[in-house]
Image (cartoon, rainbow, N blue to C red; front, side, top):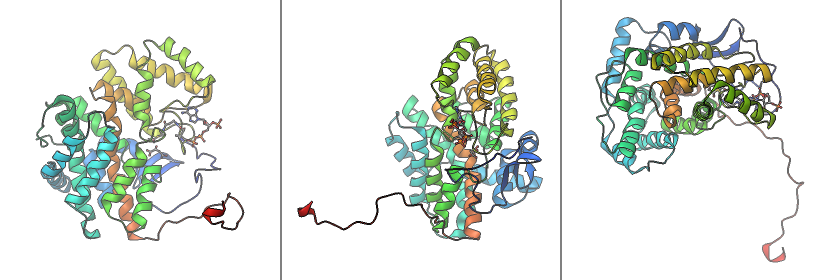
Length: 375
Ligand SMILES: CC(=O)SCCNC(=O)CCNC(=O)[C@H](O)C(C)(C)COP(=O)(O)OP(=O)(O)OC[C@H]1O[C@@H](n2cnc3c(N)ncnc32)[C@H](O)[C@@H]1OP(=O)(O)O
Ligand SMILES: O=C([O-])CC(=O)C(=O)O
């Protein structure tokens, strides 16, 4: 059970910056809850679409509501032609998070949110279409194909894998994607969500809030850590090599991506879940390197620094074992966290005051202006 961390210092750490009914992070009793449900129970027993519904509509759906919701999302998967054309113009070496940010922003010009009454419909559209934004651009620029952006897959996770690989995914892979999307869906006032709320507090539109949040998630200290973790683990051929290099990195005070957390103190409750699935995928593909290397890094980080893997670390190997290119790891996070971001935007709008903190001034004393010709 994660104890609350002693919080102090910079980065607004430990300061309550608003209220939410969406989730708790690092509180006694359960490490992470979404609207009162333990995330581990949701990951074990729910579908991602159920969790999206819970966050966006307030309660878990009935079977009929879920069927209706999934059916509706399925009809919203295709991209407008103008968006496809924009995606085709983005270079192959662009960062896929920049592609997601641009895709979201362009959709905001094609299908704008004209009133806040449209906020749920616009969110459903983004939820249904984000996998295609990433996969259409990726497959066009990397493989020269214009993919069909629709599929008959029942779930968002399955739809994503289908578009990426051009074939029906296995049941195991659909299951793991479902779990992954649930684990990443919501996390209180993390940096990207706070970004979305700041933007929402100016009464801006939903696309602006989500576009801004994508920019915040991109960084390696936040969502970008799953890609950085992959780049680390794939450098090593054996656990011994990994430990030797890791000790040197720690000696140099390098940051080890995928470890540590701003709120959790002893463990990230999402880690045990994705770690279990990563092990199952490792067994499926007969891996004898990546998973043991990951475990060796995990063990050494705890022994040396008392730092634990966060949600991102074992996501790296899990995604890799499903044949997902490393550069698409953080965009998958976007497809999931969209639900949390949007739910926070709705919450901010429902009880809004513009977010505008103060700064402690550390600059020079007041001084007299000197005209340019006298300087
Ligand atoms: C889904 C997510 O977004 S989860 C977060 C993903 N990000 C990462 O994995 C990036 C790596 N981790 C980090 O950079 C940090 O742990 C963060 C950004 C997640 C949290 O930052 P903070 O709240 O400032 O960390 P915290 O206060 O716990 O740091 C305590 C000490 O541990 C060190 N530390 C924390 N994380 C790491 C790490 N991953 N590797 C090495 N040292 C670390 C800090 O440098 C700090 O050392 P210092 O006191 O000598 O300066
Ligand atoms: O809460 C945070 O600071 C980062 C995080 O784990 C998340 O957003 O999922």
